[in-house]
Image 1 (cartoon, rainbow, N blue to C red):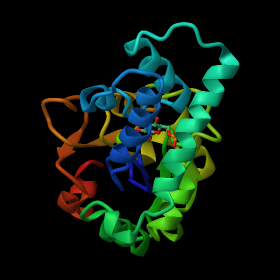
Image 2: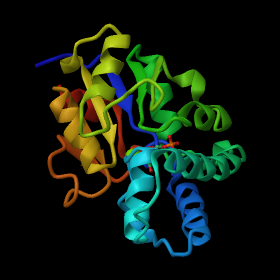
Image 3: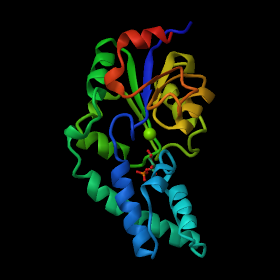
Length: 218
Ligand code: BG6
Ligand code: MG
């Protein structure tokens, strides 16, 4: 039994839902390049880094002739549209229960960290007014290996000066659940049990989370 001293949160799909903005920006890029991009394809990009997402999208569209420099330009074009949208985000877009649970943790002196693949995580937390509720941020700017590699969560524990076994991860993506497991942490899946079957607990959203349920994971 290990005492839970910190909670590490994925951002997209756990704290806020930015998938719709990623979708709109990728679709705009795909359309400019002469093909379409579906919501089903967008689902497959959840938790995937920006450049890897671009490569997948190009392959689905049958575009195989882009150089590394061109790919960088396309990714940054997509990102500029995405940033325009997230700059308009408001606190109302925080997913149900997320802010309340973060506040409860801090009242109990349980540390909080963000563990996200996004390079835009800080802007999103600023715009939604949540930045002050995190002790540390680990995002796509400081991590080199994508989930399911455990780097993002191990870095969070390290910055908090805690051992992995004292941390619980909250994740909505299968790759994120695997990353947390590989880090030696407990993991709460946000979504459906059928998909996130390797998580220690699965809940539909943070509105269903409580300090009691956290304690039961110990
Ligand atoms: C993840 C999203 O959180 O961040 C992915 O689920 C996204 O869809 C990735 O590609 C990288 O985001 P960004 O903001 O750095 O382009
Ligand atoms: Mg996610």
